[in-house]
Length: 468
Image 1 (cartoon, rainbow, N blue to C red):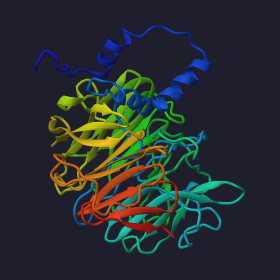
Image 2: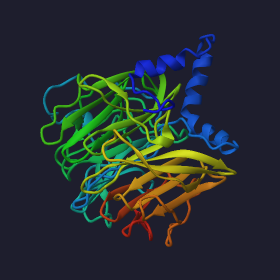
Image 3: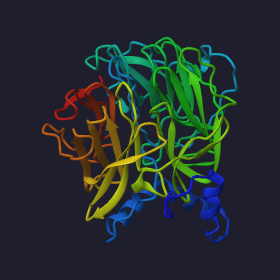
Image 4: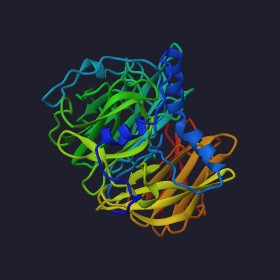
C-alpha cells in the first residue's frame, strides 16, 4: 500500500479523523434546516463549484439521485428505479415478522383504480422494472380525486406495447413534485418498483410492500429502521438498505443493509449489517455485483462506499484509484450473466461540463481504471449510468432546464464515448435515469409524464413508449 493511499478502517475511524476538523456552531432549528437543505443539494452545488476550478482533482462525493441498475440476459432481471423526492408524510412502520407476509388491508386499492383499469391519462412514471417473459412494471402516481395523487403501479405483459393498472395504493403518499435531487424519502411514500420474477416484487421509497402473486395482493414488507432507502434483487436474493431518522432528503444515525431470500422471504426486520453514519447522510445507491453488495452514500464529511465487514457491521470498501478518499459518483451493476460493477468518478471540469473516469470491479473489493478522461457530460446537476455488459455502457446527465443534459454510449467498455446515432430528443430537464434490464436493451427516463424511451441495440437507436 502506497503512502498516499487511504488505509482501510471502520466507519467510526474514518469519520473521527474528519470530525476532529469540525468547528462547533450554535445548535438551533434554523441552522439544522439549512444543513438539511444543503445536504439535499450538495452534489449539484459541489459540481458547479468544481466545474469552474482550474485543477483537475477527484470529487469526494457518492451516490446519484436517479440510477442504479442490474440484470441478466434471458430473461432480463428487473431494471432499477428512478427516484423522486417525497413529501413529508410519515406512517408507522410494519412490526417485525419472522414469516412471509400475508395479504393485508393496508394494500387495498384506491377506488376507481383497481386491477385491470385503464392507466390514467395523467399518470407519471417514476420507476421501471423488467421482470422477464414480457412483463414490465412501471411505478408512478396519478390523480385519485380531490386534488390528491396516489401511488399507482402499471403493468405490461407484452414488453410495453399495452398497459393496464396492476394496483393502486390507498393510504400511501407520493414524492413531492416540487423537490428533486434526494433519494431518501419518509416512510409513507411509495415511488419505486423491483420485481424478481413476474410474480414476486416490491414497491418502496420510504415504505415497502411485497407481492407474491403478480400484484393482485400486497402486504407490508417487514424491515428494520424508519424507512427503506434502497432495494435491489438479482432474482435469488433481495438486498434492502434502511435508515433511521429519515425525512425528505436525509437520514440521521444508523444505515443497515440486510439480505432476504426471494423464494422464501421472511423480511429483514432485526437483521443485517449496520454503520452509524451520524446526522444528515443521504443519496444511498445500492449495487449488486460479483456476489458482493455495495452501497454508496453521501455523508456530511464526504462520500463513502460501504461493504459488509462481518455479519453485523459495514465498513468502507476499496476505492478505484481516481476515487481515493471517497465513493464513486455512480456505481451500477452490469446486466451480463456474470455481473460486475462499473463506477464513474469526476476527474476534471470545464465550462458547463464535467469529465469522468470509468472504473470497474469484479466484486466490489478491488477496482481498476478503464479510462481516466474519455467521458464528458453536460454539468446539469445529476448523472446516471447503466451497463448492459462489460463493453456496452450508457451515461446521462440532467436536472437543469437551462443546459438540459447529455446522453452518451460506449461500445468498448468506456474507452470511447459518442452521442447515439439515433438519440431521442433531449428533454427540457435532461435525463433523470437510465437502466439496463438485460440483453441489448437500455431504458431512459426524461421529464415528468407517462412515457419512457427504449433501445434494443445497445443505445444506438431509440423508441418512445407511452404508458396508456
